[in-house]
Image (cartoon, rainbow, N blue to C red; front, top):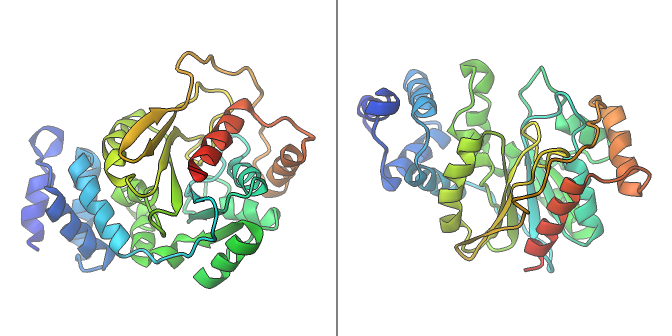
Length: 305
């Protein structure tokens, strides 16, 4: 590919830049994931795309390239496997993403948590999972066994898509997120047998994902939601935003008139303290926030659909 020509296309700012068609976007992302783009040109492309923003057709092409390079994960018979991406970690409030996983597994729904961690300013979700006795599996095969026997497994992103893992690892070096951070939430290691949880932080990504998800949710359904501090659990206080995508159709699952919840935010972010909160909620010693319960119920519905 002609890197300078592509940079001219996407690097002219928010008004002058042109969107790539899906085929060109797929070719470009394939080269990025295969680590065929020189460092300087890669940085220019990633920062240009960050400024411009990804169009739905670009995301579709990027998604196709990612899926073509994603490892296949066997899912046990029964309900679909819920995919919980984790790339941020706790900053001000307890991370309840593992609680979502535990509550789903209790209902017989297999759950795969996958991701990576690059923030010195946040508590690693994998340190939290370790404190809960849920360390990352050593291989795809071990994760498959855990899904079959325990209904819950944890995998580093590197095991599912090494090229995407390397792309996301550039965040500390570049200083900002790149297209890989949007893509990772769309990863599906077994199309037709999984439910994606697409948890976004910024409202503009609700729009771009809403445009893309009907196209890629023909086989595997997806739940689009607002994240809490970037993690895949519903904010305990905010108005809910839960939209299911299945069979190419969107279905809101939240009450648009629901008020914000007047509940305390738990400051227990250190792994041991956070793990204790998750255990107490899972055991019924602390109430599970209503918004988290609504999310779990929506995912159970999609997993058994």
